[in-house]
Image 1: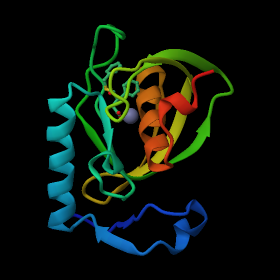
Image 2 (image 1 turned 30 degrees about the vertical axis):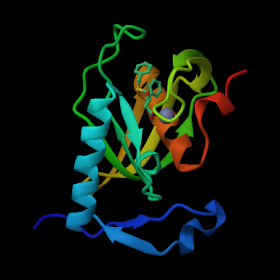
Image 3 (image 1 turned 90 degrees about the vertical axis):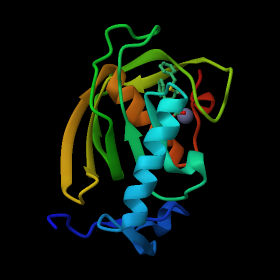
Image 4 (image 1 turned 180 degrees about the vertical axis):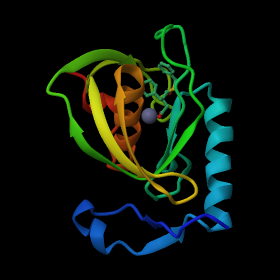
Length: 159
Ligand SMILES: O=C(O)C[C@@H](Cc1ccccc1)[C@H](O)SCc1ccccc1
Ligand SMILES: [Zn+2]
């Protein structure tokens, strides 16, 4: 198949990130099943994103799936994007405050500052390395989900 082996990092001490045992590769059927499970869980919660640790899987995997919603009516409609080992390469100095919620912190909303623009490197679900710039609400979701991989939730960032 055309999927390349991309070693998915296990969460743990960020300093050990480079030595993290690769626990799954993108061609691993179990990883593809996990991506599908995350999509189902995200849609069931009317979410616009989700991170693997939120379903108890301590691996570097998130899904970003912006769509218009009551708080962000002009948010872009996008195909859900699974990101393996997402890494922020650069960001704007400019931050914007916006409302966030979280599957793991039900019933609470907070005003959170996020970079307005970010550049992200990640593996797609087929193991191909991607580099992409995101802005505004989609950039917010990416930052929110990557925080989950580092054990942070949005309440940690409310000013
Ligand atoms: O816990 C999660 O990752 C799902 C989050 C995704 C999110 C991140 C940043 C900003 C908004 C949402 C939400 O629970 S999805 C529900 C939602 C949708 C739109 C606006 C606010 C909350
Ligand atoms: Zn969350």
